[in-house]
Image (tube, rainbow, N blue to C red):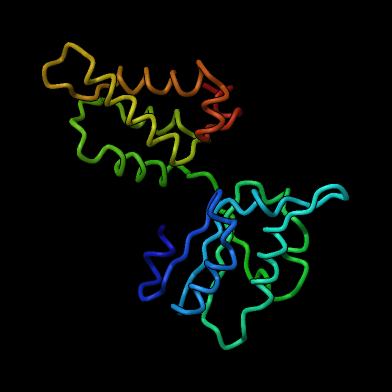
Length: 199
């Protein structure tokens, strides 16, 4: 979303999940409306490494489309994945398919502070020690922090407090619920097991 916002004037075509079956149509649309950016979200869903018994027609179509863009076309392919280690080598083996790979690391303390400010915006807060929760969420991604604030707001709404302010206790309950009671949920939401074991 940030990159798209920073590239005004470009058509954005987003393919994710089942919509990837329309790869050919999406790329035709991008050519017709260029300058355009074709975003393939979670590309590992179609571009996992091939085996002898498994071929993927959508992957072949993606490779053909990336190879078939004329030099004078203004079309950018943006591929996202949380699993770069499983990607088919053909994605990057041929020069020109992938010009640059950028790793977006888990947010450091400064980034988490900004995420706290973002997701707390508009909430009635009565949190006395926000720094403690910023530290507790080391190893968490933005999705985990967003969900923590969402659950904390729900806890506050269910409380006997007439003003329903989000308190330290609400954030604590939300953090514990997401990180300790269900490891699978916390893994999906993006809290590393290392972070959980430290707290």
